[in-house]
Length: 149
Ligand code: CTP
Ligand code: ZN
Image 1 (tube, rainbow, N blue to C red):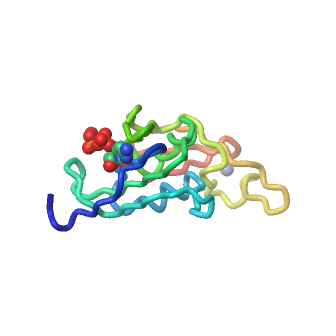
Image 2: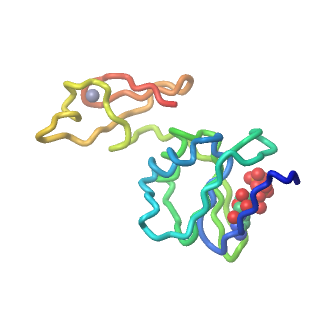
Image 3: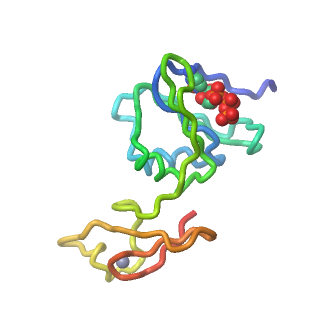
C-alpha cells in the first residue's frame, strides 16, 4: 500500500458504490438525488488508487439501501460502478450496474420546444435507450436523441 492511500472505515450496514470513474462521485450522488442533508453518515472518496481503474471514486453510505431502479441510474454517469450491499460488516451482495432501458425524470430533453420543457405545465421527461455505444436515449415525446456520458 502506498503512502498516498486514504483509509476510510468499513461500514456496518449500508451501500458501497465502488469503481466509480475518477472524478464522477458528485455526479453519482446527484443522479441518486442524495444531497448530504438527509443525515446519512457517508464517505466520499475521490481520485484514490485502484488496481482495476488506475484511479477511482468510492461512495459509502451507512444505513441506506437503494432499489435496483435507483442503482441502475448510476450506469448513466458511472458504467463501471460496482454495488456492494453490506450487512454486519460483510459484503452480502455485489453486482455491476446496468444501463436502464427507460429512464423517467432524469434526462432533460435538449429540444427547447418539447412539452417536457414547457414552463407552465412541464410534463415529466421519459427517455428510452436506443443505442449502447455510444450510449443514446430518445425523448418519448418529441423523438430528440440525447447522448449520455
Ligand atoms: N466495504 C466497506 N465496509 C464493509 C465491507 C466492505 O466499506 N463492511 C467496502 C470496501 O472498502 C470496498 C468495497 O466495500 O471498497 C468492496 O469490498 P470488498 O468486496 O471486500 O473489496 P474487494 O474484494 O476489493 O472488491 P472488488 O473485488 O469489487 O474490487
Ligand atoms: Zn423532447
